[in-house]
Structures are given as structure tokens and as C-alpha cells.
Image (cartoon, rainbow, N blue to C red; front, side, top):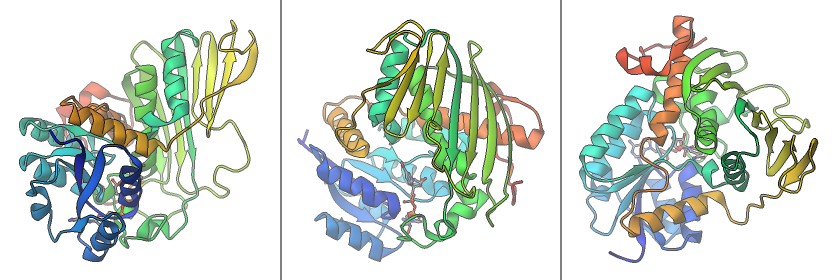
Length: 363
Ligand SMILES: NC(=O)c1ccc[n+]([C@@H]2O[C@H](COP(=O)([O-])OP(=O)(O)OC[C@H]3O[C@@H](n4cnc5c(N)ncnc54)[C@H](O)[C@@H]3O)[C@@H](O)[C@H]2O)c1
């Protein structure tokens, strides 16, 4: 085996730029070739990193000097691109969400597994210091028995976002389209938190209920969503997410994810980890709030690609397992489904009937 993992990129848009930078900073990983429907973007990205721009996906995945394909295209193309790479015998690092629905993701997962290559999802929060520390604190029992989890996402995406993301690098309205994106803020942004919560706490969602609407944005997807989750074992989850509220997050601190247990609480407040402990632990006195150190020494995306490359070069499974994307999407799809049928949806119901009936509008 070579001593570097050699990447090909399908998609050279907004996030691909960041992933390429992360690869450049990572040990034992290198960008070799890039393709994009817009050849100028492929050439631009390749040029920044001494890689080659190629004309087509087929040409990219056929290359002998590529070990893994990173896919960062609009959501509805994730499945087909992942499969194209897998059928050519390449490992697949597929951006979140791994499809436009849990069903879509499941089809992709099953088909990629049949090709005998690995699939992974760059859920970067797993490499953020505060989430890593949270996982450790939960595992060490410092919160006691978990009762509740709250995730709040209060965004104010500019109008231009819907035509080209935050950077405007690739002009397209796919983010506004239900069939192309699969949904709005829940599938686009909160899917990260859903995965992080699952990873850090080990809790699996059992039943999901949601209400959502489109209030402030001229798009087909939801821009405000409230979700209630019952986890196996009884803990309660609440998601309160919006992509366009006047004022965005605002100056109020402490509005990040909150994990509540019988012995304490954790609040992930940006890069700070706030901890309340009933018994006293981790240098915080009993009955007090304190801050637990969780310094982010290196960029989370760099840590992620480095860890991914290390595992694959050692012939191991990727650190983020292939079903992580599907498991996160089950919560998302159950939420959308519950709004459509007007009642809570059990996760186990999802694959017994179509999850994503084609619809033109949400709200
Ligand atoms: N992990 C994260 O933190 C994170 C952050 C942002 C975006 N993302 C995800 O990454 C993916 C891409 O998002 P983005 O913001 O970079 O979008 P983008 O629109 O900026 O880039 C997508 C790129 O795909 C290209 N493309 C479209 N169709 C193609 C085709 N048939 N063949 C080849 N290329 C094609 C477009 O030309 C564009 O350059 C999405 O799944 C998004 O949710 C992840």
C-alpha cells in the first residue's frame, strides 16, 4: 500500500474548497484529481493544490492513481456519484446528507457495500474538541442518566445563499428545491447535530414528531422546524431550528446544544463547554456551573481527513462507519414524514412505506 491516500474529488464547489485545504494540511493524504460539471471550478480547485482537472466523473473514477473519491455535489446526486465511484472500486467519502431521504441513503449504502469498498461521511462535529469532550464526559457517567437533549439552530442565511451558498462559488438554486435538497435546515444543517448527539451519547431515536413551515424565504424547503424525539430508554430530544430568523443567533450565549442528565448538564456554547455538576467533577465544585477545557488545537476537517486516511492506509474501516449518514437521516426522514401524516413516526416504520412521496412544496 502507498504511504498516502490519494483523493479524487467529484464536486469543486463551496465545501470542496475547504476539504481540499484540509487535505493539504493533513498528513498522508493528497488531492490528485478533480472533476465538476463546471470545468472552471474543477480547474480552479485543482490548480490551487497541484492536482489535475479532469473532464468527467467516469474519467476520474477510472484513474489508477486515485484511492478514494470525495463526493460534494447537490444532495440528489450523492447516491449516483457514490455508486459510480464504488463500482470503479474506489472508497467513498460522501458529504452529508448521504441522500435526500433515509430511503435514498439506504439504497446507496446497500449498493456501495456490495461493491466491497468503504463508505464514510465527513461529520466534522465528531472532530470538534467540545463534542469529543462531551462524549468522554457522558461515557464517564458525569451526567448520570440522560433525560433530555436540546439542539437549537437559529440561522439567518442571506438571500444570496439560496443561489450560490455562502461564497457564491457555484451558482445554482438546488438548495431551494425540495426534490434536489430533500428539505431545508433540518437535512442541510441539523443533520450534523443529530449525528453528533447520537455519537456522543449513544442514544438511538425511537419516535419522532415534527412541525415545520416556510416563513421568511422564497424556497420550497422548510425554514423553521420543531422536532420532538423520544429516544430508546425514554430520554426526550428537542430540535428548534430555523434558517432565516431576523437577528440570527443574536448576542444570547448558552444557546448551543444542551445535554441534561440526572447528575448534571452540558451546554456546548460555540467553542466553550459549560458543565453543571450535582456531585462535583472535572474541577467543578458540586452544585456549580463551570467551564471544562476543550481547546480545538487543529481544524476539525483536517483531523477528520487525516484520521480517515490513516485508517484506510492501515486497511481498517473508516473511523466514521458507513451507516452513520443513514442513521442521522432516519431522524430527518421520520420528522418530515410525521409532519405529512400529522402524527409521531416510529423510526422502524420508515422502510415499510415510501418515506419521500414526491411533493413540490413544503409548509
Ligand atoms: N460537511 C459540511 O460541513 C458541509 C458544509 C457545506 C456543504 N456540505 C455538503 O456538501 C455538498 C456540496 O455542498 P456545497 O455547498 O459545496 O455546494 P455547491 O453548490 O457549492 O457545490 C456543488 C458542486 O457540485 C457541482 N456539480 C453539480 N452537478 C454535478 C455533476 N453532475 N457532476 C459533477 N459536479 C457537479 C456543481 O457544479 C458545484 O460546483 C452538499 O451535500 C452539502 O450539504 C457539507
